[in-house]
Image: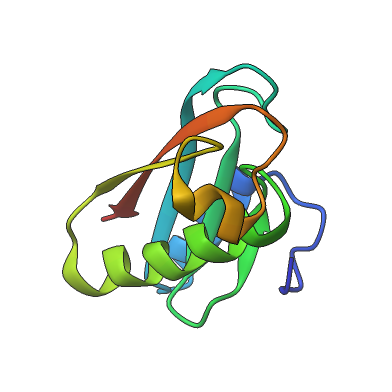
Length: 109
């Protein structure tokens, strides 16, 4: 959380950021299996400068989601991301708790 809206609900932050003219992406947990750090419906919003509010997982997973969100802001194409222990990427980004999550990232227009 890197903005003056620290502690604000992520959806309220996204609305405020859009109203102020920022380009914004929203990441939403759409599915979980097993032990997952955040429930379905959790949000992380990111602006073009990398400011963010909310959480979809924690640790390095959030860093990976923020990086993907910046790509989505740039090209406008939504992405489905999956992290889990069966995925080699999951170990690199820190989701080794035995669960899996799917996160959809889209630009808000």
